[in-house]
Image (cartoon, rainbow, N blue to C red):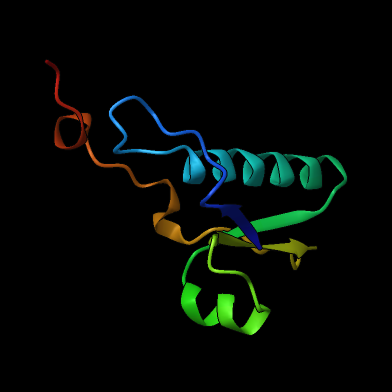
Length: 97
């Protein structure tokens, strides 16, 4: 599980956005890369109830869970779903100003 302390984040100018999710995502990425370097597979999981998991783990209210990271060895032949590499055209996702 990767979480961050909501009371200990950088707040960007304007006070509307903080770095909590961004920083935790960087940590998760480094964990996944380190695992891969050791020959261990991983997967970012975000289909869970964070409130339930926080309660089950007894986390304090200032801790926010970003994701669950499973680690292990993939079964031979395992891989992403067929739609994993499908992409929308840039014109549907990008606008130029």
